[in-house]
Length: 415
Image (cartoon, rainbow, N blue to C red; front, side, top):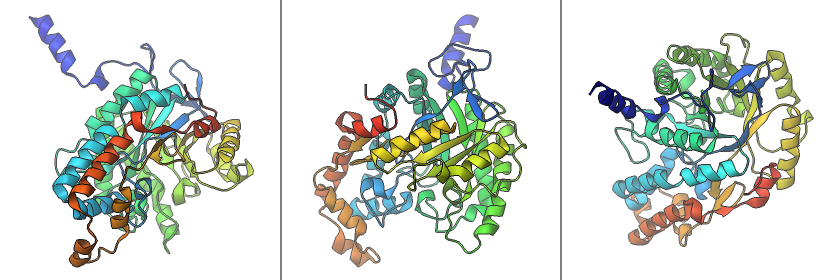
């Protein structure tokens, strides 16, 4: 009886606590990715250069990936859907969206390209009881990430958790779902929530070696603000608060720190030695695909003697991406291209817009400043609802268009 009870207890544990195995590997003494100077090391001691993609839009919707322009943040998108088809149907849509936009089939395909890592952007509200993506309580952040962890372990991929939208907003633009200013840096309440969420995540995943690391905040502090230098001066302190919270429960995982102004300015960082498992992450869109274009990033990396990784890059020609992949790899900078999936092109796989999607985009761009404006702009209900569910069908991996030339431009392959 005691043996049976023990087995039942073991089987009832969350799967991330079942054992210490790296992706696709056998149990080893230390199954976690580690740092040695400017290199990442796999559990077997070999060098790991990150190559992969971002699961953007899934847990933090972005307007341009739906072909929206003005309606460009998760909050704006949800509000627009509610105005168009009502909150109840919108909640059903988000549930279906989360169920089908990224699945095991997507992760298996990413592995087949030769990738070794995926970066998962998420919204902090997935770990609160705030209104988000169809839920107002009992948010499903852990359940969604658990699925990706399980799929990545099965496929043999590493996973980076990226808080893309922090409490109060860390960027001050649509990408952090904020109210137009990075209030995180001025609000003790938001800072406390930020740290408590990371501590909760770290406690839950402390023994999960599939997770390569925790990326604290994405693209902090947009360049638009008159007090940008004052905000920049607070960045390292905010990072240290979150690192300290994580280390109370998890001393195993790497923590990734992004630079200010779209992860491009590393001057605010003055102390690279306050934790022994730190690495840095940069982003870049456009410009010349040359070493000279990123020399400042390389210089910073060399000065701190820690790994640097290009967490976001993309939206360019195949030739540009091919040339810049070579530059990054020649300079020991791993990468995850943005994004894995979106409407049309410039991604690993493309989603073909369903029939009548223009009705949705037209409503998203219409003047909805008053209730009369909303009534006058709203499309026919049944057609709008059908179109939204047709989008769910279109975003399933089996119906996506594989962008072969894009993938091959990165030095990966379609298998």
